[in-house]
Image (cartoon, rainbow, N blue to C red):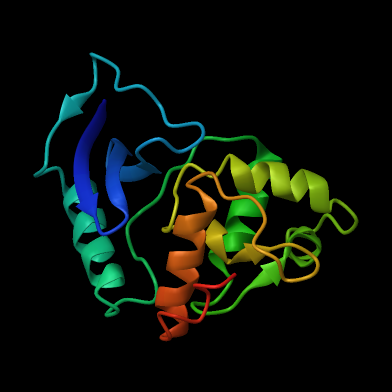
Length: 166
């Protein structure tokens, strides 16, 4: 059974989705690959993984959380899951390039493929794909939009104006 709830983040409404007892999706409204709510899904703000994810997101946006602990169950290919796992290991406040991500995922030389898998990440913020940047350090691609990526990196830097001119 799939459960869902909505969360009003400082950067827009988010859809939280759980498959059983694990979080399977976190999406900004209007982001690329945002799923349609299926009539068979059940809205339940009290469902444990959704409740925990919402609490952790509130703490993250308040600057009180640097790592998420919610159980995860993203759906994707083996390659996508290996990329998402590598993304999960990028430290709070750190950025790496798509080439480095590919290397960490065990696919040296596959920066474009790692970038495509990053774009399909169903767990925005929780699996911090906003921490992946272009080879020159530029803020390239983010399914939730570059303004949000810039804001998330600024939040993590502790210097809110750091990226305002980027």
